[in-house]
Amino acid sequence: MSAEPIMEPVMTQVDPIDLLSAIEEATSMPIRPECIEGTAIVPPQPNDDHTTALSS
Image 1 (cartoon, rainbow, N blue to C red):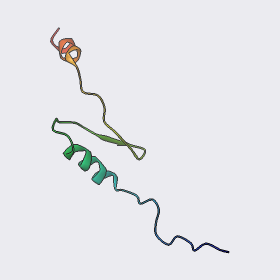
Image 2 (image 1 turned 90 degrees about the horizontal axis):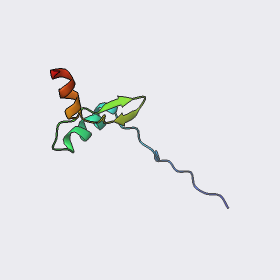
Image 3 (image 1 turned 90 degrees about the vertical axis):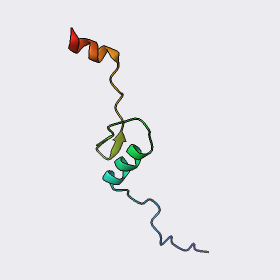
Image 4 (image 1 turned 60 degrees about the vertical axis):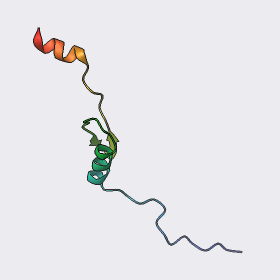
Protein backbone atom coordinates (compact mmCIF):
# COMPACT_ATOMS: atom_id res chain seq x y z
CA MET A 1 0.00 0.00 0.00
CA SER A 2 1.38 3.42 -0.90
CA ALA A 3 0.24 6.88 0.06
CA GLU A 4 -0.44 9.62 -2.43
CA PRO A 5 2.07 12.48 -2.19
CA ILE A 6 0.87 15.85 -0.98
CA MET A 7 0.93 18.17 -3.96
CA GLU A 8 0.00 21.35 -2.07
CA PRO A 9 2.56 23.42 -0.18
CA VAL A 10 2.25 22.67 3.53
CA MET A 11 3.86 25.87 4.79
CA THR A 12 3.48 29.04 2.79
CA GLN A 13 5.95 31.85 3.22
CA VAL A 14 4.53 35.25 4.16
CA ASP A 15 6.23 38.36 2.87
CA PRO A 16 7.80 40.13 5.89
CA ILE A 17 6.42 43.51 4.78
CA ASP A 18 2.87 42.08 4.73
CA LEU A 19 3.42 40.48 8.14
CA LEU A 20 4.63 43.74 9.71
CA SER A 21 1.71 45.65 8.16
CA ALA A 22 -0.76 43.12 9.58
CA ILE A 23 0.78 43.45 13.06
CA GLU A 24 0.56 47.27 12.89
CA GLU A 25 -3.10 47.13 11.81
CA ALA A 26 -4.04 44.64 14.56
CA THR A 27 -3.35 47.05 17.43
CA SER A 28 -4.91 50.37 18.39
CA MET A 29 -1.73 51.81 19.92
CA PRO A 30 1.24 52.88 17.80
CA ILE A 31 3.93 50.19 17.62
CA ARG A 32 7.08 49.67 15.59
CA PRO A 33 7.38 45.99 14.69
CA GLU A 34 10.71 44.84 13.26
CA CYS A 35 11.68 41.85 11.14
CA ILE A 36 14.95 40.30 12.34
CA GLU A 37 16.16 37.22 10.46
CA GLY A 38 12.61 36.37 9.39
CA THR A 39 11.07 36.75 12.86
CA ALA A 40 8.61 39.55 13.63
CA ILE A 41 9.52 41.29 16.89
CA VAL A 42 7.68 44.11 18.66
CA PRO A 43 10.12 45.91 20.97
CA PRO A 44 8.70 47.19 24.28
CA GLN A 45 7.44 50.75 24.47
CA PRO A 46 9.65 53.24 26.32
CA ASN A 47 8.53 53.88 29.89
CA ASP A 48 8.55 57.04 32.01
CA ASP A 49 12.21 56.54 32.97
CA HIS A 50 13.12 57.09 29.32
CA THR A 51 11.68 60.62 29.25
CA THR A 52 13.00 61.43 32.73
CA ALA A 53 16.57 60.70 31.65
CA LEU A 54 16.23 63.12 28.77
CA SER A 55 14.92 65.97 30.91
CA SER A 56 17.54 65.76 33.70
